[in-house]
Length: 383
Image (cartoon, rainbow, N blue to C red):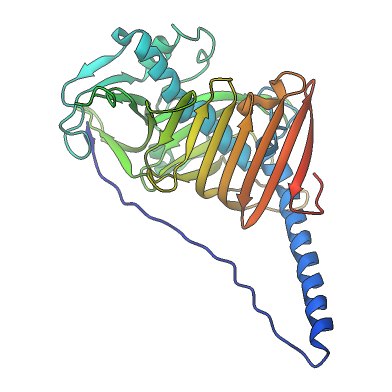
């Protein structure tokens, strides 16, 4: 194996507002322009909210991966994959490691070059991940696959570049460190894996799968696996660091910009697969993305810089490719934030999302699985 250092990039956007005068009185013109701008902004916010209700039920607690009748949008695919995939895999692997590191293989020289080329690490790869995590969660990962080859992609409409991108094996690294406080707290997740979800279009199939590839193009950390009998494969890696100085509960900080693609094949409007791309930025010491589980069991997900959630979904009756792209930040806080519809009666999910320049802030209340959402921002807008 070898590690190749990637590039660190930032994208900044701004909103410019130009104001001008006219021949009528300043006061009247100012108020007229102000009211027009307010109405325009509210209309734009409402339009975006209506889109988020389709593409991002997850943002407001209305998402359920096991309910086939609830349509899954781009943001739903992205956030559910992040939460269940690289984030939770890192957390569960660390939990297992702290209980029984004999399930892991140790390498005294983890990488041949790049970061950690002079460090040791513990490793889980491919089917070892499922076997090892079975000790903690006998059912949780039973339908997952941690190695994807061309057989798994059979009968999917893919070109050769897509086949290459979505084949490989998942690998989890837990890195050694001279400092005992830092030792075994840096966990990397890389490669390709798949897991099931429910989605029905009212026809035959409801059991679907997401195939997830950690992208190397937009990831700072990259892992190349060399094989003796086939071409080497490079994937991006997400580094999740468990901060041992946390003042309240478990605190996991993303150490790098990372990106992954989610392949779905559930849309019967098209023979094509549809792919959602998700890129998260995190810069430790500055703008970090993180997940915290407090001592009172509340959770906080703070994705401070989302540079892209993008995808498309074909429709034919009213022809559209529904191409969408979202940038900004995502913040969820409460109990059971990743599966809020399954939270106990009376649970509250607080949220504050800035997407495409608009802030959506408020909370959702769980009434025995029925979710009531109240917005405090934008002012004048109801969910």
